[in-house]
Image (cartoon, rainbow over the protein chains, first blue to last red):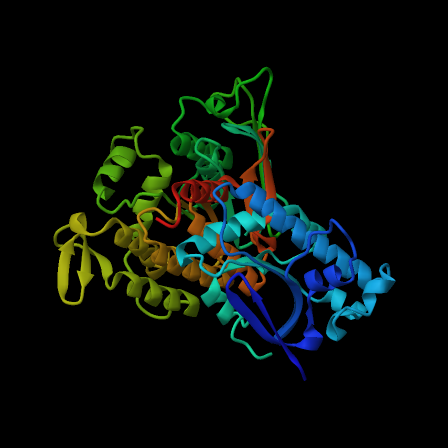
Length: 170
Length: 340
């Protein structure tokens, strides 16, 4: 099966099976669909042990004024999540065929959702605090979508590698 | 096990009510919101029932309770415990897991005797204990002299009770497996034991064949050793309730995590814990324990309108000032510049 690599923020994510990845940003741009919708880099059916659906955004740095930054990431996560769910529910007929094969069934809606921000060069000692800020920015959405508290996280390159998002072949 | 509690107009506690409690319960909040007060309130009620009818003590329950409140909170009269305000009455109640309960009220004119009292709690053979942030071993003689001989205020009843509890000699023979495992882990943490040396009438710290004065022993070691001793001398049993004020005090973050792992093992055996903390590590570690073991872990925190709310730590760490300060430091660090 074809594998996909995604280069973002100076790192290469993947390789993932093509059927497991929805390149939401690219697809919506190619289709010229949904102007104004904020999109994450990609949505991934992640199968390491229990299956989950990952919404991943990558950033090379955090600006000094971080509130606006986290608000932007929050919008990307929630717009992408809502669009994915509503597409599976049949509300976007033109998008449904573009969804990855393993990310289009109604059963997928019941999988754990993970919202992950990857900042490759982030020092280890800042991971905890930035994760807390990220979790706090999505506190209400976490409740609305019943997302596990631990499933909203910030990773650097080494953690993303450990998490099989970089240097993987899955 | 305490199943529920409710306090109204009790010192700084305007109103705090629990829904169902668990074997591990956490209280957080800034200084002066009443975390320690809440722990001491629960301790006073449970410990009164444990002391009632013990040995040759012929005091009625209301006397035992009045004495416990008096010596724990060190007040001139019971009405000093009632939150100030026109006509307000202190209302307190606890319900145990067997659905028996204790409830009482104190009015603004109550001096010594609690009149409005309901108590159908079952007799409690277990012993509960309050572990304050500071260790008591080095001050044990002073505490006993002040609390028992001189009968003077200074060290409250939680200190005196703890020093007395530590005086029971360590028992040989079979102990609960979970207690044995926990004692081994605790002793590994501080690589030794503490013992009461009857010849010198002093506590000592033993590491290998060496003996050290308790005065020169690290604060954290003494803190861990106290729990070890109470498990070893059988003062504690699976029905005990342990109240720990600031489990993090004097402990390195690694030791905090280790201590909380031990606490989770003891909780599985039946001991109920109530802890008050300011520590991010304690909150985070307990969240992880709740997730991994899939156990409910009630967390109490003040809300905006002078009351308290209860959430379940298993479902995530609720928005709170400990985390917010961590984030604020992160923002400050960003302003300083993380690149140098």
